Length: 607
Ligand code: ADP
Image 1 (cartoon, rainbow, N blue to C red):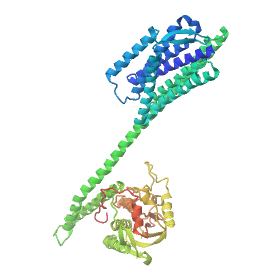
Image 2 (cartoon, helix red, strand yellow):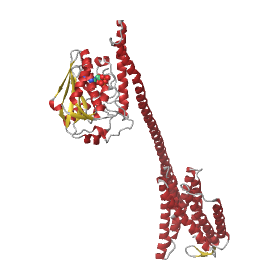
Image 3 (tube, protein in one colour):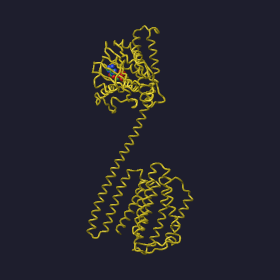
Image 4 (cartoon, rainbow, N blue to C red):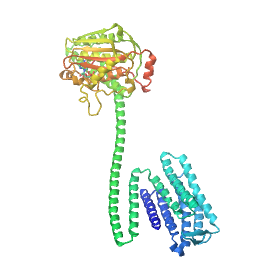
């Protein structure tokens, strides 16, 4: 039994001092850490002298030993109260005068306990140890200790209610420590003695205070979870090392001592390696954590820069559009023979070139502005009942001259059932049809034919066509940003297909066609495909990207089909036919709409 108590005392003292040093080192400047360090010293003195109080061999010194135990308990509860007051931060400032009063009072009781017979009068030696005979002022000691033991619990509970989550967790750990201490004391100092009538195990109650020390150390270091693993490993290693050391000194023969010493050395080396490897692993994890934090910050910065860039593009495009439109307008007036007379054919030719360039520039700026509006979610969608046939006819009329100029025939074929009203934004639907028809004219050879058709298709067939297009050479079409060819700037919920009846508008041509593998990436931002024909044809690669976004804003789908180079192409888009306007309003309500929504920026038709 004696060996068990020696071992336990050794382990507890070393462990508490070890934790004290750890916590102190973790934050020498923090008063919480310093107080805890001091607390573990007072605690260790208590454990040592409590152990000595049970050693009958020290009969002559038992009075002094017990007096030191009592004096130490007074300091211990005072420190506990102080610690609880400042941990993790104090909720009120203790008035200076009260501080001095408490210190003076404590010094007085410590003095009474140590040097007079007022608290510990004498001791009687029993078979299990020394029994304390209390003095006249013992009640002062009881009141003082009880009061200082109640205050911490009240303070802790108040803090538990007031503090934030992390601090709450820390306080909870201290309360766990106190609860364990209480349970152990009830068990070993009350329950077991009352059953066995034997105080031999009462000391376990005292020893259980180590749980409080351990929980508190954990609570202080809780914010540095990684360090905690080192501490736990080191603690386990220290405990095993102490047990082995004690075993060496309690050996019965030299040989046994030698063997045990050898084993101890091996285990020491093993635990040294273990602690070292844990330290290294934790260091690496901490480095990784730091790197990931840095990455997070860098990512946030990049996102902010990206938002600024979009904002800048939007602002710059907007500012550019006004003067460009003016240049374009005045040039067209100057080229109009009825308004201005210019005789020099060279001047007319140059002005024509400038006019074309200005138109292209205006188109590019308008496209950029629209892209930034779409990506910022600021493009205004104003839906109303529109006659589809009317919209198609007006596009054909607008592009008639362009088609004639390119020597391409342009016609439309709208089935009777497709002559319906759709609930959509007229400007945006028109913009999409203009883009598709304009492209078909642009990418057709002389003598080519462009046909606009409208009819119905079931949703399943549409989705199948879109899927087929997206999957064509999908791997090849992936770019470095990891963004597939079909990335959309439009909110996911907006893009859910609605209903079975879908109106499909298709634009068919027999022009330059598109290579199979290129079809999948047509609707990507700045994507221009094809060889000589497309490279020679001016364009931005934004038209189809914008068209796609506009169609998706109407819960529709857009796709392209081509049998390959010079085999012509067909571009189609679908629009769901809603039974009621309420359905649209309900669906669109799910999409975030910016307060500063803007209409579609338009420039002269064509490139
Ligand atoms: P832009 O025409 O300004 O280059 P778009 O986004 O409208 O931009 O078109 C993207 C690309 O798709 C074009 O550069 C072209 O390579 C291809 N494309 C579009 N329409 C057709 C078409 N009707 N026939 C062949 N290729 C086309």
